[in-house]
Amino acid sequence: MSLDLTGDLVALFRQVVDTESVSGNERALADLVEAALRNHPHLTVIRDGHTIVARTDLGRAERVVIAGHLDTVPVAGNLPSRIEGDLVYGRGTSDMKGGVTVALACAARLAEPARDITWVFYDHEEVAAEDNSLTRIAREHPEWLAGDFAVLMEPTSARVEGGCQGTLRFTITTTGVAAHSARAWLGRNAIHDAADVLTRLAGYRPREVVVDGLTYREGMNAVAISGGIAGNVIPDACTITVNFRFAPDRDEAHARAHCEELFAGYRLTYTDFALGARPGLDRPIAQEFLAAVGGPAGPKYGWTDVARFSALGVPAVNFGPGDPGKAHADDECCPIADLHTCRDALLRWLV
Image 1: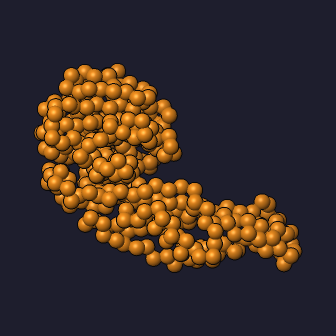
Image 2: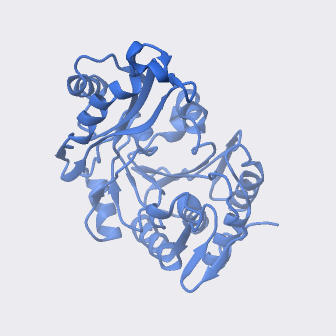
Image 3: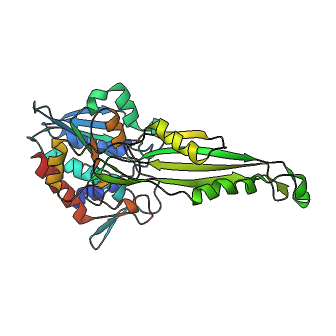
């Protein structure tokens, strides 16, 4: 099988979707993408592992980076793809093989773009950050990701979503005294003591803040709780895991200080952190992109790899086909109209 990047867009989309590429199993799709891009002589194609980078080198005054990940979360009986009405169903249709398909179709057509373009198709996005191939590329080949502006083809229902939230996770452990549950007064129940932590979370009022013209809403939530060793033992420990999603105006120190203020009196053990990204929509190149796409920009709720580009000094936005609310769902799907909308918008901007 080969990918025809200049043929019917929906047919190409279904080929990409039906090539299963759960994280760690991207080789087959990466091989197809590499071979298809090498058929277009206006592109210089580089491969690193299962990441494919294709570039134009026309000496334009500006360069844009357009990126999408090849991998998906595990299949849940939702392959092969199918069409029902104006929707294509299947694993990865929303997150984010629709964006990959649009990028491939545009890469083939844009032999003489107004700006030089770097197309990036990468692996291992749906897993731990240290396994994401963009982490390796940014460390070993940052020049491959260099540009004046970047577009990450994450699902946004074909609307521009600027920047992204940061994310921080930590645990709080309450401690008690173990005892037989028939003689509970001889112990202290650590799960009961967790009530104060949960009460503080239930009463938390998230901040809304405007960053570069976009309003971000923060969130602080318990996402896991564990404690107890047996059905007849008073638990002597209970651990609550909390996730803080914060606006891109906070740095790590500010985000941690906010958590520690809310949970004064407790020890917080931090387990994960990723900085958010400001939208960067004030730049002329971003304004031209918005004009080509049409419609107002909104904030990105959640963390995406635009933060990696922001860390490299490249302002970035999210823009791609598919409802992000359908990402990872068993009935994951993408409107056919979104594919055409995103492809045509990129061509308007880059031709």
